[in-house]
Length: 83
View 1: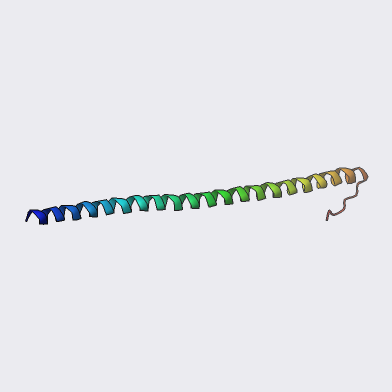
View 2 (view 1 turned 90 degrees about the vertical axis):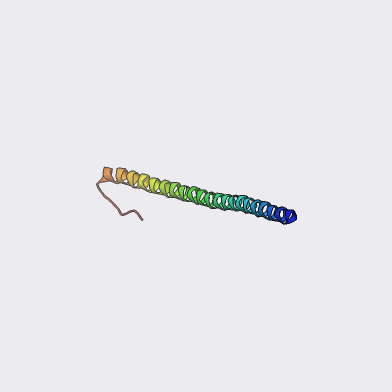
Protein backbone atom coordinates (compact mmCIF):
# COMPACT_ATOMS: atom_id res chain seq x y z
CA UNK A 1 0.00 0.00 0.00
CA UNK A 2 2.86 2.34 0.80
CA UNK A 3 4.39 1.88 -2.66
CA UNK A 4 1.02 2.78 -4.23
CA UNK A 5 1.05 6.08 -2.33
CA UNK A 6 4.57 6.79 -3.56
CA UNK A 7 3.48 6.24 -7.18
CA UNK A 8 0.50 8.50 -6.67
CA UNK A 9 2.74 11.19 -5.21
CA UNK A 10 5.11 10.93 -8.19
CA UNK A 11 2.21 11.19 -10.63
CA UNK A 12 0.99 14.34 -8.87
CA UNK A 13 4.52 15.77 -8.85
CA UNK A 14 5.07 15.11 -12.55
CA UNK A 15 1.64 16.40 -13.55
CA UNK A 16 2.29 19.58 -11.54
CA UNK A 17 5.75 19.89 -13.12
CA UNK A 18 4.23 19.35 -16.58
CA UNK A 19 1.57 21.98 -15.89
CA UNK A 20 4.18 24.52 -14.77
CA UNK A 21 6.38 23.70 -17.77
CA UNK A 22 3.51 24.21 -20.21
CA UNK A 23 2.54 27.44 -18.49
CA UNK A 24 6.08 28.83 -18.79
CA UNK A 25 6.44 27.69 -22.40
CA UNK A 26 3.03 29.15 -23.25
CA UNK A 27 3.90 32.45 -21.60
CA UNK A 28 7.22 32.70 -23.45
CA UNK A 29 5.64 31.75 -26.76
CA UNK A 30 2.90 34.33 -26.31
CA UNK A 31 5.46 36.95 -25.29
CA UNK A 32 7.58 36.40 -28.40
CA UNK A 33 4.56 36.38 -30.71
CA UNK A 34 3.33 39.64 -29.17
CA UNK A 35 6.79 41.21 -29.48
CA UNK A 36 6.90 40.23 -33.16
CA UNK A 37 3.49 41.80 -33.77
CA UNK A 38 4.51 45.00 -31.95
CA UNK A 39 7.76 45.21 -33.93
CA UNK A 40 5.92 44.82 -37.24
CA UNK A 41 3.44 47.53 -36.26
CA UNK A 42 6.25 49.88 -35.21
CA UNK A 43 8.00 49.32 -38.55
CA UNK A 44 4.74 50.04 -40.37
CA UNK A 45 4.27 53.27 -38.37
CA UNK A 46 7.80 54.40 -39.26
CA UNK A 47 7.16 53.59 -42.93
CA UNK A 48 3.91 55.58 -42.91
CA UNK A 49 5.56 58.55 -41.17
CA UNK A 50 8.34 58.58 -43.77
CA UNK A 51 5.77 58.49 -46.56
CA UNK A 52 3.84 61.33 -44.93
CA UNK A 53 6.99 63.45 -44.62
CA UNK A 54 7.89 62.81 -48.26
CA UNK A 55 4.43 63.81 -49.44
CA UNK A 56 4.43 66.82 -47.13
CA UNK A 57 7.75 67.94 -48.62
CA UNK A 58 6.33 67.55 -52.13
CA UNK A 59 3.30 69.65 -51.20
CA UNK A 60 5.49 72.36 -49.71
CA UNK A 61 7.65 72.48 -52.86
CA UNK A 62 4.54 72.79 -55.04
CA UNK A 63 3.13 75.54 -52.83
CA UNK A 64 6.45 77.36 -53.05
CA UNK A 65 6.36 77.11 -56.86
CA UNK A 66 2.80 78.45 -56.89
CA UNK A 67 3.80 81.31 -54.60
CA UNK A 68 6.80 82.15 -56.79
CA UNK A 69 4.73 82.05 -59.98
CA UNK A 70 1.98 84.12 -58.37
CA UNK A 71 4.53 86.65 -57.19
CA UNK A 72 6.17 86.81 -60.66
CA UNK A 73 2.85 86.96 -62.53
CA UNK A 74 1.44 89.46 -60.06
CA UNK A 75 3.95 91.97 -61.32
CA UNK A 76 2.63 91.67 -64.89
CA UNK A 77 -1.00 91.06 -63.94
CA UNK A 78 -1.18 87.72 -65.81
CA UNK A 79 -1.85 84.35 -64.20
CA UNK A 80 -1.18 81.00 -65.86
CA UNK A 81 -2.26 77.60 -64.70
CA UNK A 82 0.59 75.63 -63.11
CA UNK A 83 0.85 72.10 -64.44
